[in-house]
Length: 470
Image (cartoon, rainbow, N blue to C red; front, side, top):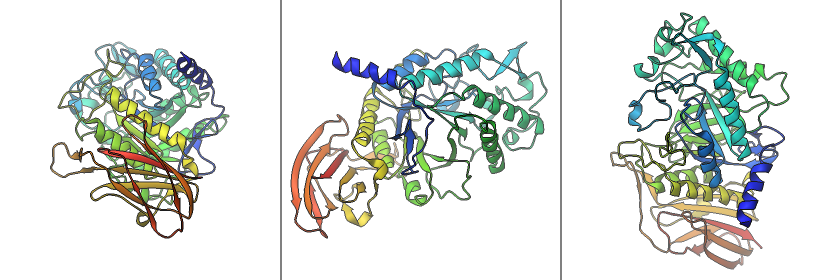
């Protein structure tokens, strides 16, 4: 009973944050929400929670909140998919007939791009409000490229689907400033959404999902970011703008100064962090998948990215469907990813681990100052002389393997070495699957300059460690 009372107290307190999500003033590689340093961690549905009227988003948000996951990614309704796209079973971005909600009103079976659907905006605001009441930040993705004809064939901004004769273009020209009429409609949608959501703190905007496909131009993305910023000029609250930069890892060149968060998809290993460490922005691994359905795969990828210095991790969770908004659906073998209640609990432990450390004051340790067992990957963050956080895992991408991400499941006792200054320390080994303390020890370093060797408890796949000066 006491735990239940504390939890609902947290929900009530989360209703008002006082200021929108922003980059931290002390360390712009991380977020602050209501003045509190924050990392964003989730295992979220496939982006249809608002546009799919059949989806019970309250049940979904309750499921995330139960495990203290604090992010959800959602598409605006300017884009949709149809059943069968990407081999996703019960895809929430592919609503059943009559269940698709778009910013634009429908008349005579077509969309009127000059009129708004008030039911859509009521649902959008109710969703963001409900998320905030549960301590969850909403990433609202405004646009998405039309990957294939199946998406373009049902798009509201395809001329065959609207009453306004707009969209007589190739699908690769939709998000490219090539049709003034379409650009005007897009600008109006952005201004309307940004105006409607001006009151919310638990919100930021991503310009476009995966703009490196489908002919999306950099000029168009910069244009949309200016529309967001200009719309908010007179507003009391200014919202963070995100840009999806690449799949995998790459160097961010000519960074748009309006953008505070750059998102990567499938960034494993998380080389994107080291490549862009000098930029005063946050970095996210904002979509995962195509590596099989094993929980360990996506748990490890989340820990690995945040422990490298990332600020956001979103596992693409296919266990959320219409009728299974509690995440109880079991994705089939052909589904391009995983998701489960166990994984969400484990990612909740990842967020809790970061709650234990002053991550906003910590920096990545140089590779030579921390070492792990043969074949393992090691990440470490430090507030020099005070707190050290270490993560060891045994997973890696194996080309041509099925699944491509392979994890060594051998259980063993292993050693790690860490360069510490002279002093007394307390070390806590953290089980990443249960969140429990696996081993606690105290030790003394007589003189700095040599690695202190620490022996782990028995573990398989991965383990965390926090070392504090006493």
